[in-house]
Length: 72
Image (cartoon, rainbow, N blue to C red; front, side):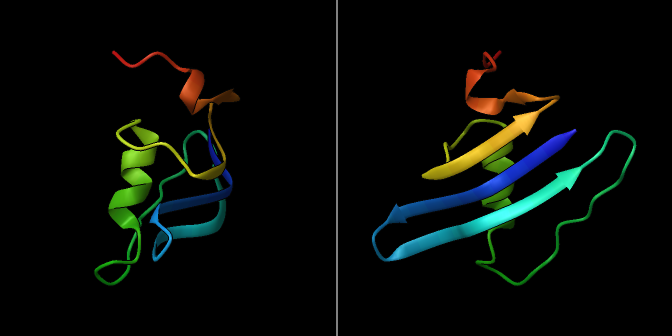
């Protein structure tokens, strides 16, 4: 399970990549992320693989908060 709970990512005061994003993907479900350039698709992936950390909110993988998962 992957869960974004009110996730916001800001690169500075004027650049907001994501704002208050909430979604949940259950095990076995498929998810497609679509949208125009600059919509935050790459930012979602970067947050999931810990290339970036959220400015606020929580991201969970299998009920563990992603920032607590060691990066291999």
